[in-house]
Structures are given as structure tokens and as C-alpha cells.
Image (cartoon, rainbow, N blue to C red; front, side):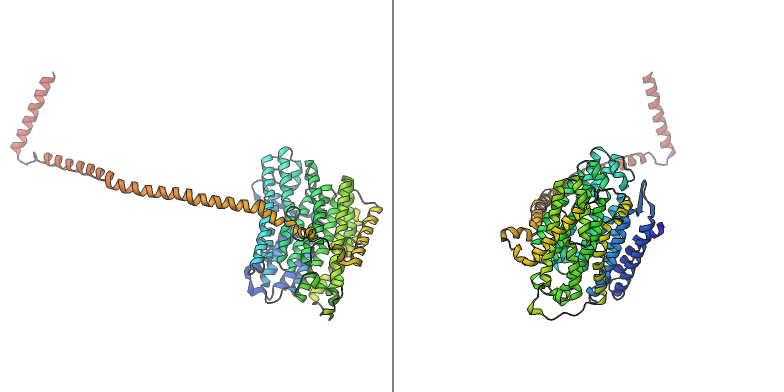
Length: 615
């Protein structure tokens, strides 16, 4: 069965790489190949979810590359592949034949393959590699229309923000190695570390997860990510990159609990994000921006669940949210293509003109609002039961976030269903390739409700190995009644009840100016430091190097003029002396025997005199 596990992650990665490399010549065949690959991956995911295979291969000495499917990752691979298949099928109609289809579908498969590797990774090295590929492909997809500078800037902002937070995973990996208690860097071993190393690992994991999942204070990058094509938003916001951080926290919940502080930090960060970004969503007048802020808020519930130890509730929330949010973004994309706008006032009557899109969007909005009997209503209560066990205050804040979700969801629904006399003509039907995924996801929003009630909920808990508290009947009734009441008030009164002072709504509509704050507190100081270092390099280091070079040249010239002349003179003097000695040595060599005899007599005479004198 390990072969099937390798195939599950290798198939989308290999086909995606092939499509990207081949490029435009494959545009004609890319949609069919991509959809077929996604459907095949879904089939493999269903099989491995039941079989729970494991696979391992050597990576570095003492650090194996491990993949495994257990209860949590089994549910995730099925969710991820199902959403990928639905989004790619919709993309067949949304991404026109004039676009670079091979590049688009190839990047989408690479993106999905990286997410599948992320959720099945059992060791930090594999997780880090998949994490990086997911970030790189998200940058390429957000900036898919790269000729538009605004889209390129949005892609850079999203990439750099998440990349900065990703450094936390490297911190965690380094601390795990330094501790000596997790030599293999297996994720399951991280909770066994102790002392200050454990604190560093926990802090690194939390930073990386919060950044990837666009939780406070990193939320602003998700607003900029709306510059990408609608299918990219649907996939990124529902079952891949943005939920990767929440998945990691759910996976490493034992690490958060063992730290003693990590769980509380994560739970309250998620709860505050659910409330604050919910209010940001309420203030939006752009449908995609509203959905983006709601993604941060809804994922806040998953983060809350991880911190409170409600793994079952967080997982159910993740799965239900994946269906609802992908559906909402796909419909928003269909309206953007058909009507050329995503502004809520301009979308009046859109649901009446395109009934399939309108009905399915209504299902998505009611699901996000937590209205019974749709899936997020019950899933949210399962995770809030864990929050109630942990802290009553945490439960109250979470319930407030759920109420706010009803406000922004019904606000969007009110606009698209209001009649617009100026556009009373009903629009044409959506292509079949677009309608099928919308209807399928709408059915899933309703069908997934059963997972939050016995016996399915108990089975999910056993699969996940989680024993969190179960909600009482009054909790379901309370949250459902609040959602219905708030939804009714917003629907009856319309946006008038939301017409607050501009001084109140302006910061929320601008995402609390989080990006401005990040640029002021981080980007500008870093750029100024970089400019100062560049100036130091130019004015000090470069001048020092250039001065050293000039000094070396001058020394060489002086050496050539003075020292070399002396050396040459000495060499020439030695040579001249040697020649003179040679001439003197040649004088006695006349070839005449009587002269040689005279020389010998003189030499022996001198030698005799010396011997006599020495004695």
C-alpha cells in the first residue's frame, strides 16, 4: 500500500511539473489532463484513507523522509483531493482557451501535490520542503496575470509575509536537532522535548502556522491574495495553503498542550481573529474581500480548536469550511466573469439572473452563517464544546464570532438576491463544467452535517484518537437560534443596520491597516537598514577596497622604479664579478708547459713557506 501513498503525492506533482515545463503547446490538453489527474488522486486518497499506509525513504543520514496516512491525514487527503477536483473542473469553464492553460493547471496540480505532501509528512524535513513548494506555487498562482504590476505586487506581499512566518519552522527544526531529543525530526517526537528547546519548537510552530493561516497579525496578506484568479482563491482559501497552518496546529496539539502556554496562546489568537476579522468582513463592500476576511475568521475557529484540544471539532470545521468556502469563491468567480464586477452593490439581482449560482451561493452563505441544518452550524458547536471545557470566556468569544459570521454571510446574501430593475433580464445558464462542482459542493455543505452527531461523530473521534467533550443539546439549540435570529434581522433590515460611522467602519474596511502597520514597523526599518548597509558598503567598504587597490598599484610602481633597480644592479654586479673572476682564472691557462712548471714551483714554494711558518 505504500506504493499507493507515493503515487498519491507523486501523481499531481509529476503531471503538474510536466504541464508547466511543456507550456503553451499543451494548453489544449491541459484541462482534461489536470481534471483526470485530480479525479485519479481522489480515488487514491479514498483508498489510502482506509488503509492507513506508511512509507519511508532515506533522505539524509539519520533523517529519513517519511509519509503516512492516519486518521487526521486520511480525512485531509480526501478533503483536499475532492476540492481540487471540483475547482479544476470549474476552471475548465472559467479559464478561457486564450489563457496560458498549461501553466495554470500545472501550477494548480503542483499546489495541490504540495498540500498532499504537507498533510502526509511525518518528519520536519519533508514538511519543510512541501511547505516551501506550496508557498512558491501560491506566489505564482496569485500573480498568474503577471503583466499587471498590481497583481505581481500582491503576489510578492503574500509570499514575503508567509515566508517571514515560515522561518518559525526552521527555528523549530533547529531547536529539535539541538535538543538531541528528536534526532529523526519526526513530528510525533516533538512533544517529547523538554526545557527551553521545547519552548523554541512550540514558538516556531505557532509562528509558522499563524502566518500560513492568515491569523492575526498576519491576516492582511490574504486580502492581497484576492488578485489571483477566482479558482485560485477557491482552492487557496478552502483546503490548501490557508488551512495548512490550522492543520499543523491540530496535528501538533500534544506539543501545544505539553508546553503549558502554547495552547492558551493559540486558542485566544484564534478566538480574537474569529471576532475581529469577522467584523472586518462585515465592513467589506467587495464580495471577494468579504469572503477573504471570513476565511481568516472561520480558520480562527480551527485554530481555537487546536489550542483548546478539540481536535475532532477543529477537523470537522475544516472539512465543512472547505466545501462552503470553495463553493462561495467559485460562484463569486462565475459572477465576476459574467457580470464583470465583484462589488456587492453592483451584484444586486445576480442570484436571480443566474439561478444555479444563486441557489448554491445561498447554501454556501447559510453554511458560513452557521444556520441549521448546514454543516458549519454543528461543527462549530463541537469545537466550542472543547472551548467551554477549557474556559467559559473562550466559549463566549467563540460564540460571538459565530454570531458575527451570520452577519457578514447574510449581508452578502441580501445583496445578491435583491431585485435590480436595471438588470431584470435573466442571464444565460452556466456551463455544465461549472454547474456540476457547484451543485456537488452545495450537497456536501448539507450532507456533512451528520458528521457532527453520533454515531458518525464518535467514529471520527475514534479515527482521530481524540476524546474531547461532546456538546450538549442546548449548545446546538443556542448557536442555531442565535444564527437564525441574527440572519433574520439582517435580512429584514438589510444593510441599513450596518450603516455605522465611517470613522468606525473605515479601519475595518481597510483590514485594520495591518499592511500599513507591517510596512511601518517592519518593512521600512528593514529597507532603511538595507539602504544604510548599502551606503556603508559603497562609501566605506568599496572605497577601502579601491584605496587598497590604488595603494597596491603605487607600491608596485615604486617597487618597479626603486627596488627592482637595486635588485637588477646587484644581480648585474654578481654577474660582472663572476665574469671578471672567470677572465682571471683563464689567464694562467696558456697551454705552455714551462709556464705550468713555473706556476707549480711557485705554488709549492709558497706552500713550503707556509708550512715552515705554521710550525
